[in-house]
Image 1: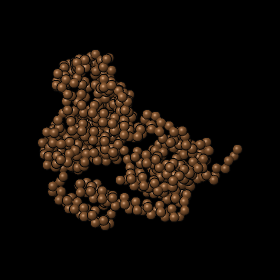
Image 2: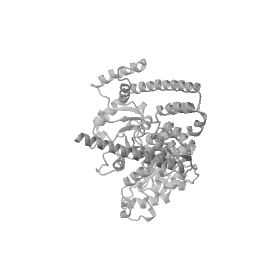
Image 3: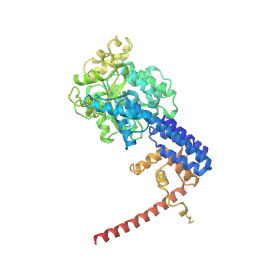
Image 4: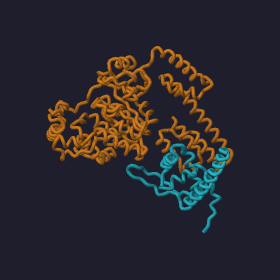
Length: 429
Length: 118
């Protein structure tokens, strides 16, 4: 909506100015995630008409601007009212800021505000466990304040794959985000990844090197990853070249043909270093925005499970405040009291939802290691009740024997045993 | 040849920042906004309305011109802007003017300080 209003204001500029600059201004509006101020474009509108036109045009421009601004203000009121209904305390603060002398005169908003104040006083006794938003809207909104939004996933989950697909198909997401950093591709395959995501026709035998040749053996055979890449490729076909999503390989580069011993494999080092490096150099230094999907242990704000630095702490030390961490809710994450809080609050038919954690009872609840959840993440991503969080395995017999021979070799190097055969289940039979 | 640049001076804050942003390299509109924010350490936020309004003026006056449209894999085709030689001389003249203002300000403030101290 904000974009449409902005476009209308651009359209009201004199034709010469509009034809020359409107596209670029709209591009900047998109790049800044809609943070361009309307007062600035209104001033430009006024200046342009004053300089280049007669009085009637000024009057028309001003009138139309007032109408549009009024309409935008009214819609904002509606949006705030709806945010209040959803229980977003930020909306209440915004209204108080806008109306310091008392209640707003718009009756609908006033009613909702009154109801919210009542609800707020009621909730002193019965606090909400967390601040809930639609997961896609919540994630897109998080980009308004953080250039990097990280999802800490449990690998192979089918609902997660579906959610990633929905996320990248969301128009606002496409307008806000430029990059997607993934764990399931290694950096030596970036060129191949670019070619595939860019729409080039490549044989599957070549494409699957993307998720097969990573530092972690056979860890990305779940079809959700290949399907997500294919979805990004499809989405890109419908986007203009300058708005296409780029997928960035985050995992450490690896040449398996040169790796023969566990020491060779260990020498690859901590892949958190590589993830952080990609985020800093490819995203933050370039002023871009990225969705990052890694295993939960790579993204927690308090460091990894051993208390060592993970990808988030490494990025935060160089770009403080740049990341927003979302942990995928799963059976293993929460202690029973927190599970109960989540269970009481959520309605499965509303999933997927995002629970903001800061200053909420759920945020204060400890995880299985006793750490308050808000120390680990900014929000919890709820994809559905535990029984729906099933893993997507590769189809039975889908992994060819020559590849499995190589998987066995790599397994012996990484684990000293054929552990990956157990993980892959029927796919190797 | 001595040219009279005084008619172009003083530059408005927006024009000064834009010319400064283009002094190092050609940039597209968003690049200028980001460079201005960097140079001013975030204190001066240039909106796109102000930017293009000023760019139009600067181009009409020959201080800035459009450079060739560039693109690369990471960087989609964008219109880039370049500081002209004339623009560079105007910028330098304004910086000399600002230097004088700064020197005068320091002198006066110092005099006021010493007056207070005695």
